[in-house]
Length: 140
Image (cartoon, rainbow, N blue to C red; front, top):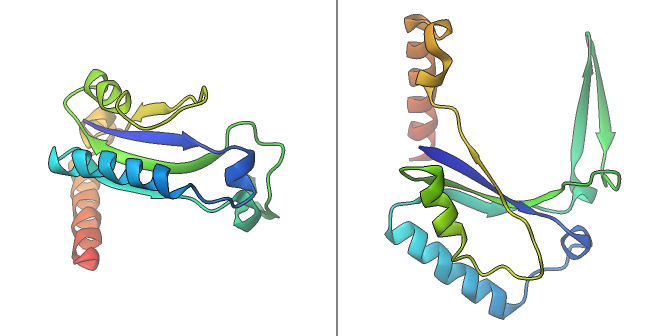
């Protein structure tokens, strides 16, 4: 099972403040543990929403909205993608993360192709497999 772990933003991350050396060190150690265990597939911090854009879809219309997004209550400042056996395993890993101060981290399972059932026809599954293979080829 793959899960996405959302690290929330706050006033400091939105102001572009970078974490302290101490926190970076603790996070690197945690990431090392995740990598050594074969859990971490990806993870990065995100820039403040002042550098972001949103695209609103309404029928055939596309509207681009420039950040910052002060009205957003649930900003994301970073993420991980983990490969785990269960959501409970992901929770146990997350409990080891060096967070503090009442922060709440969201974990969400990522759909597996099998989750789409019969609507993911063999042809569509093959197309998805080819796309994933091309992504991996491009990363190499």
